[in-house]
Image (cartoon, rainbow, N blue to C red; front, side, top):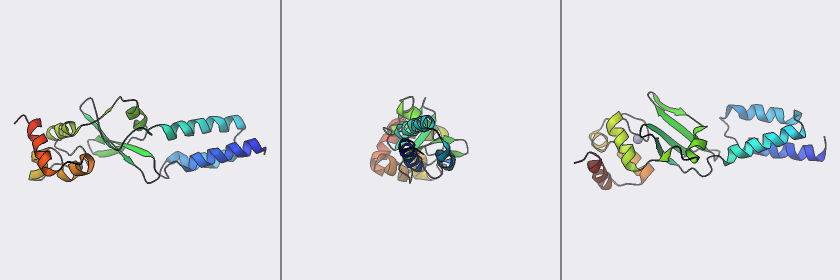
Length: 167
Ligand SMILES: [Zn+2]
């Protein structure tokens, strides 16, 4: 193995190790690195770098697409950004969505949008749980989630929720 090839293999391995452990491709990529040519390694490195950078500008938070589809983005234990989509049965991992979020096809939702979603869907747009307490039903969002994701106090939350209800 040439020094150049060994150097590329090291770079690729380092980038692959950055992938979250739950990424199904991680082990496969790592196992294939030793057999790759210089050109293949260069392509792999480019792809891994692009993946690493995608989502780099995305902040943790709740995102709403077309006022209906709710995504939440949080930092995974490996330091990457993970996106989840709120489906009918709860949260579904959508790792690829982070890149779309970065392209601004989905916008970071203001609290009002998440509350509007809650009033329409009956679920908290942050955790996906049914709104089943007096406080959460009258706010359109779980008050604990409102504090965690939007930093709002119960008092401020009431004000925003009332405005959203047109009261
Ligand atoms: Zn919630």
